[in-house]
Image (cartoon, rainbow, N blue to C red; front, side):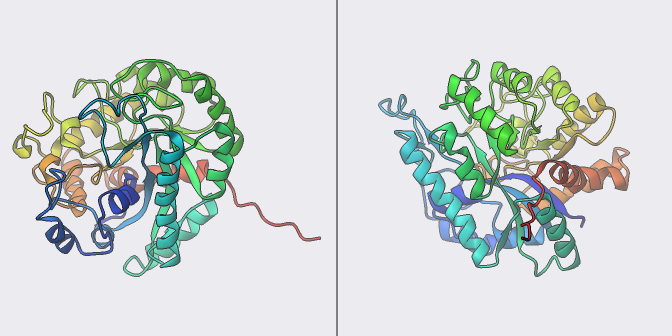
Length: 368
């Protein structure tokens, strides 16, 4: 099996909001949740740290995920208790707890937080020589920027290791409109872009509504990517990118990560009703093909599995029961004519190149 660089996993959210012990083997983790009924994905998880090691994942983007939703809380069923909080102060405190989880796992030598491009190069070399014993490399990302209470706080988060931020998740955030909504950036959103550009924070355009997507690209000259997004030409809906959006990302030297949430892979999927039987992992390869055809090469696509993004095997392709099963894409791509070098690029090379170029350089201390 070749290595994988996975550009989107919600590890801390799963641990803190779902009370999952991600250090357990997958079967034991799922067995411990089998009696729980608070969410349909209980007992059907696909991701834990031992399983990621089995999958040969050397680096992932690990998220801080929490939302401030003061306007939806009075409406029954409109908020999620594991995601939505009354204001940004509370959301920020929850988010800092998720960040603390990653720092603690780093102290336990389960992870290494990668802050610079030199960290990334050193970690990948170490991991490649000893994947069975090396810690997981983690780049801290934020899915929806509500935990940053004010744009002036971006620098503090950056100091704590945050390197990638998406301005919104679902619906409105303090900074932009996300999936399911329509609208430009807020004034605070424009201000935080300025902070990100000064700091060198990478902007993730996944989930940003289309007007905001284009506004970010027009206003922001820093690096952008899409950690986990699919193609609207294959599966309609505003959660997916149009060909125009994909072309703009190609022009900005971005990489787009392929997600494994079945509702993004199968037209007319109804969450909670449609079952995975009709959705094979081959559908992921269809989206890879589409982006490669638009780009004219294999440099613009990678993996951003989102396999622990609030769903389990009830909402994955039928032949994907664990994050290890991402490797089933290898023979599928080879059969479609992709070379070994192409598959290497998709599985890890494109993200390695992107982040080696985009993460800040290490600042060496000067001697007096």
